[in-house]
Image (tube, rainbow, N blue to C red; front, side):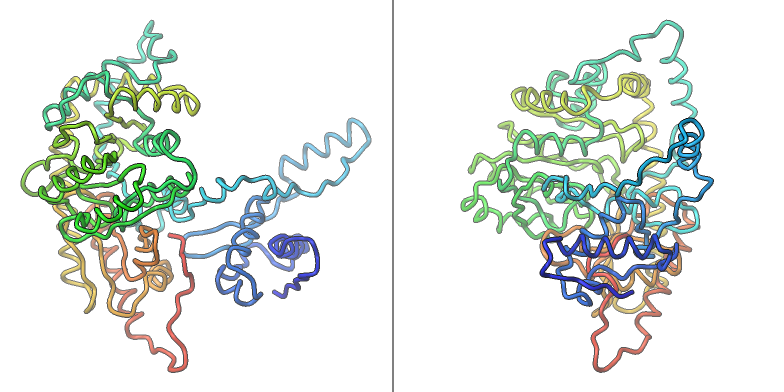
Length: 519
């Protein structure tokens, strides 16, 4: 594929690239299934910035001419056929009026997008969600509860009760703060875990991810500083980047966020808030020690900075007992607490909550009204009934046992099959094993090899703001039964072994196919 760029033209380079590739596709010189070059390699070939290629590919994807696929790269899409309903529509116009519509150049949507829309681009997260339902591969990428443990029978019965004749309230508009009986239950449930609050300080969200988005709308202007541990949850990284925040990172060790390095950052930059997942952190699985939690709160009080505590995994503990949350230790209302039903029950219901001071909730409520008015009334009613019947606590006892077995199965398989140099941490709870690859191996290289064996994972660099994590991968053990985990680890270790034994050219470094790979 040869392209010719003219830098003397006023047409941006990315549009020149897009237009030439588009012409090749429409002329069928690039047939469906043709794999376009990786972004970085293509950029080097054409002598342009990688962002130029990214923008050109975005344009082509918006036109429906190309698609990005897990482990396969970017390929040319199948064209519309003459049997497509669109052509039937055109034929109808000709029959009725004797006229054919004038051909119109496809809209160049890229020219209309805002800067924020560019910051929202998150190929890793999009690719993870795209994997759902692809049965021909084993995915250790998606952090999700196992569908086989969903309490479907119980929820079905509750659904029939809620959707009973005459119960129109379950389908009405509801308060933005959420269904009061559910807020009341969550306040009581959290009190048993040391978080003493009231229903008036609990807000129901469409998943805790919405909580992060609302907090950025309320707290952040482009250019504001925030602090987060590194590595960290890629969904949070994406939200903060989209808001235009300047992200300051603090490294972690086995005890969690390094509070000894935090004070100088707080003193110098005065960030808007500190974001942390102190319990079974994503992706590392680490649990912040009690002394670190206390030191973090002390620094927050000293510098008068809020803490956003994201706590999706603390109920999924497999050793010992429940760890105290930062919110339960907070004596001066510096902690905003996010929780969710997505990791402990049903991710598809999109139900989470936020516990915060009344003034913060007032602003979050105003922000939420502009997004979705309120979280689904019907699902809130059903979840309330499910919880009030004691079914949530019963479910948690069940899944803790199952996920512990699945974690141990993955660890056992790695212990037995892992090539020399592959190491991993064993978490006390949560979903993930955080693995370090053999010296010299890159996650991007392994991703390509693993895709050939229909096995996927998240490369470590997805969890880093700064360059890093290229020798790390995250494996989720919660989603699959033991037999699938064993097969998946076998394929993964086989892929690692094949990379280790392949000869390396003496005059070249073993460079990965993708610098920032899709999952």
